[in-house]
Length: 507
View (cartoon, rainbow, N blue to C red):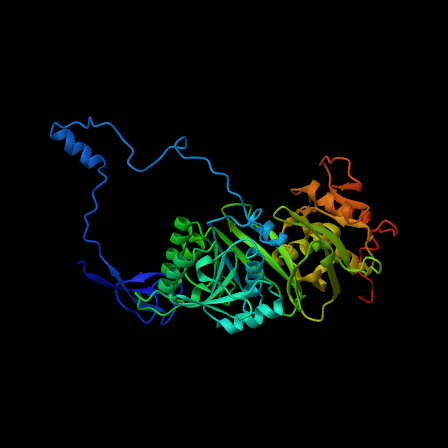
């Protein structure tokens, strides 16, 4: 029998050490090393040969005349084509993020802050899928009765059946269930033992299994605590093997650290097929579902939900959510069109500029990239002549949406200038373009897609970079090459001269 070997693994970075230290040698975290036991294989691994083996064979007068033959590998011609039919989750926003629907046999990891609505989303999705498929909802953080209460509040129409060992206990006695004739339904398993979960999956044979959450699941053969690096890695690998071999779709909830990254080793994100982040302010109503990895679709797609009294509701037109009141425009606002993946979203940017009371002016940005904000302020001072070094500047996006792409640079610059002169930008105009250090307005990608979204929402004009050809759209195109040209075009009803760009005496 192979002799067990003891080593120590860091809970924070996953580094391995042959002995215990109070401080991890790799990341410097204190008291993060935990003891692990591995089994050394007694099977000798054959050498792959190489130059030394070839020279040895030539020296012995031997020649490798044996024909090459594949043992397990296949060519592309030998691999059969199989069309993957995606499943509709019942929520178009989730299907968009996944690339068109749920892929059978895939493994999806959903992370987010506590209380953001991860369990609510998965329970609602499970209810929709349970109309056609067999769903197993594994909860390691709640009991069956707690899930039942939450399901009642969300209006889950499928009867919840709590699975306990080899018995099926129906929560609602008026809805009897025959375990021998299991069909499309939603089953709940309050369990944290990985072996019990795998045994239930093998017995129930669900189409979709939801694990809430992976940090609560533990493998009894490992001595480390649940949520440690070794436990998360081994449990995810075991579930991945079942998903691929048994064609079971896995939806896994992952906790996040205080920095916002998914807790556990980074290998967790490498193992799964899709990584989704559920974002948003806990005290705001809307939630953003963002994809950062997808083997079956595009990355950086977003889906938008709104938290209401009976759960999450998808937002079909997110541009209306991030637009302010266009009937009563205020000074210092500008409309931009940001793209998240292949989805254009019209967003209102708000700016506030005021004389500073400190030796160094304050710069603050909410929903915009801080470094790009500082760069745009420097361009306005150097190329346009606005004394930004004497002014506090605050920029925010309506609704808290993060718009950090360069295409919103022109909107930020126009909003700042409008706030500085206390002017109103034409509410029927959108601004699209990247601001260069020389004061140029540079072209951006997906321009036609952005303009179509603006035209659909009723905008009449678009100030865009010069030199790009556009198809005939129901919107007036105003090409500009400099930031100063965009400033004059964005405020057409008010004359801007060099004197207007100088600060007033009382400022």
